[in-house]
Length: 323
Length: 253
Image 1 (tube, helix red, strand yellow):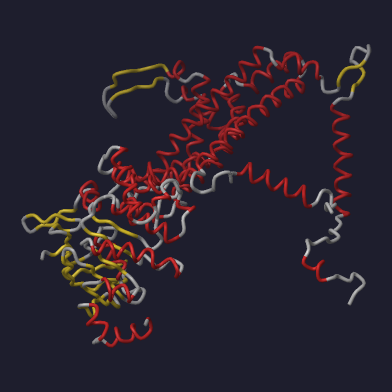
Image 2 (spheres, rainbow over the protein chains, first blue to last red; image 1 turned 90 degrees about the vertical axis):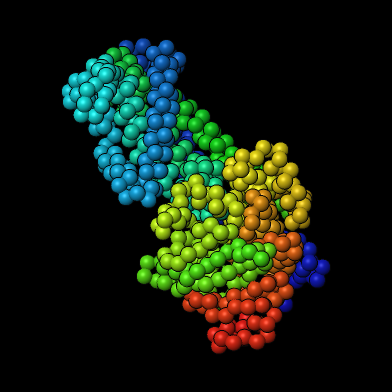
């Protein structure tokens, strides 16, 4: 037949074929390696010191190290975390209420929820933060009492709406609009047959929602909520509009007074990266918890990824199959 | 003999589409009634009306002497509130074509969730009952399995056990074997046959003519939202009168 004559026994043995070569992958790899080397080089390069004596890091790593654990910066980190957690709690709780209203068979309730989402998604969060910060100009006092009637309790807006409250309300109420859509999507993704099965057992509506629908909707809700949390962590930097002393606010302040703006931005960026990385790990474990019943034991994403990597390593390492 | 289900001129429409055009039917306690008919004939809709998953538009439908979804007082109908409807549904078991097991719960949890949340049974009592029910449907070794780890036939048997856990006085089966691979149909029909022998009142929407002939006490043929023929399965199947029923049988058999 052909020059690669195969005997019958070979035909039934394991396949030993010449693998496909990928020259373009090699080329792209080479380019990436050069770019990476350039990046590392510039990150750790030195420039002549401004005072003409010796040289200093181009990126001012010594300054970065000096301010990285400064107490002002650490407080900024704590405030950022506080604001992120509380704004997300407000956002999720509010989103649950708005989503439930939106799914109500009552037309008035669902349109109220629709208008809420429309308004908060339709205006920039920065503008909302400024609005809450300046709310005292519209309402000098906050009253608690009978609508259109007498009030029992009054408080000065300027003392009630602190920078923190303004930031929390601005970020939390805005987040509620996004979370409402995420939760609604998750609930709608659950097979209607699940609700029918629960109904046929005589389970009331709220119980069905809590025990049957929400646990299943969670699988759809968690990944985007994780994204929202990470996004929120970074959006808290806009709380600068409300003069709240979170990470970006304190680092830019230090940078402005010490004329080391970029170095302090690097400090802030590293802290943001650390915090978002921790959140990502938390998201992974939450996702695994709510995948109960959907994936087989020992079949979660990490182990799938791991197996895939091992498999790849056995089959092709840079195009070389082990013989 | 007392009637478990009485349907008197039941009408149901979805918008302008009239799906049930006056169903008259009586199902005696302890008997098995099989509903046959081509798809779109309204048999599943009728079944769903019995536990108020669908609201009827006209006529009267009652289960064990109580109207479904309403209370009649001084010649006036009052809608039942959510809690009363839940009580009514908890006494009627339903088995679905697509099983509808809760995928995030194990087989045992699927069975105990009804008694625990609706009947407020203790965890021990409910679990003990679930284990004996699983045993009864031949799945004693699948207690901790999630639905995704079970075959279709096994899932449907868990679904039957889940419905039985509420001690229903009536069981509704909506094409319980239609979504199963042919070799798995038998195991589900076996469980249903045992249930019928124990005297459970059952209404079964099915395409299994053999099951209807063997287990059914009554066979009802529906088409276009009407009952066209009904009677003792063996007699009706041997000697169908209505031409549409004859036509249907010639296609299925």
